[in-house]
Image (cartoon, rainbow, N blue to C red; front, side, top):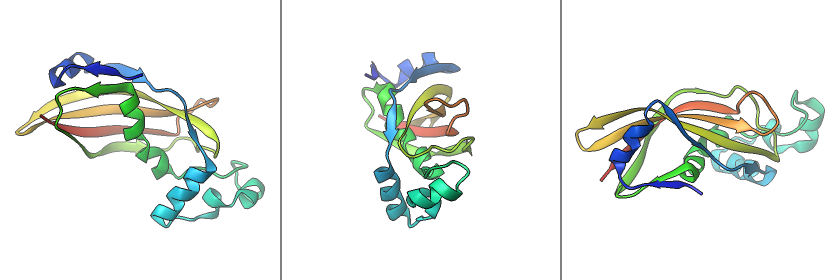
Length: 152
């Protein structure tokens, strides 16, 4: 259950701190195939379980790195909600890496922190640190700095 901040100013107390960790989220083969179709990236390592089992160094199909990355927004909304925000815009990313593969049928979760807040003319820009952890592995599936602009 996400915790709710009454307004954007309440976010200030989290600068330099971890905000929270999400519940586990199952990355199914069906979701991987749907992502492959949506992005036209049907490489066998994502969609051909038999071949991936034989030839892949992972022994199974894996999620696209960009699929894992795209789940950050969903996962972060499980950590917190901010009241009084008219619009939140995904402004971009810094320093994205995919240290470990996310195998099909694995569970992931996001560890979210707040690196910085910056007042922009018409919005407040937040830079979050996000590590997408894979259950049972040491290395995360994705680490990124996620930039969100909030408009009131």
